[in-house]
Length: 375
Image (cartoon, rainbow, N blue to C red; front, side, top):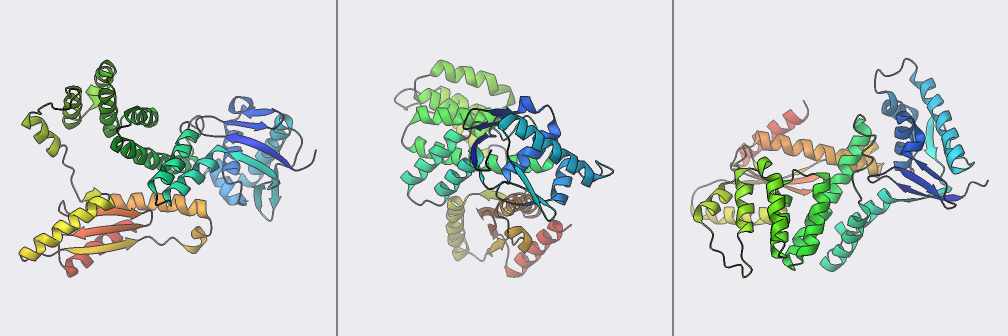
């Protein structure tokens, strides 16, 4: 059999690899979690050569094998045999100068790649209609978490899952906000259900789902969902859902002040306040008005993450590192800054910060953050 062939690979909520003539390799056929992990990692990085040290760390960690080099060779041998036996004879995995890599002549129609492509096209689109079109395609492709059957005990695959889940939530949240503005409540319901399938404890999405059900006249379903989740809700979210359940068709329901007051207060978190860029602009404009009327000091800071050059050369690794680093950095800033300070994640590698202090105070605050980050 020649090298050229095409495989369909699906790793979102499943583990199946299918040839054009319907030969199939699934998780149930592999009968080895180690082989399943190794194959999944190689396929996810199918455009890159993977060092033996990277694969040894993936498979054995730091203390998992007395001879990781030979153990890895044995796994690669078994994996090649598994692929040949289930998908047909071919050179699926190649090696060169201390690396292993997927044969570039074997094409992949890969649900993960397609999902990421549509997400990035949508993210970079400024026209809302075009963004929605790309995001809808991404949403359809995201059938569930990345390889839920094998990644729980593997840090490298877990990082990939977090990376893909963050993309999915960005897509879902944008589409929910977009369809709420259009009163397309059936679409809002559908997207909320998809989010809750991955994270049933998301209180904001649970509230939006109840609202969307009520607005469609599905009052009994809304009540049933409220009863299902009410014991896990904060007081603020419970009150919000009760308010939605009391809405009448003309939306003229008068809300008791106590409900509004409790919703406004909600659960006040400690540390710096975190918001998106649009809200940050409003806070900044308000700060300008306040400081112009009295002697008050505010400082605005732009903080940028610069990964090492060897990381930036690999786009997928770079995105994973930036995602994890920005999450860690944001948490450090929340814990370090005061409640009156505001943090905005401007992009995956930049933060805008509004500090309630003068220039010298801002320098000291940023130094504290850097010190904690490098510990």
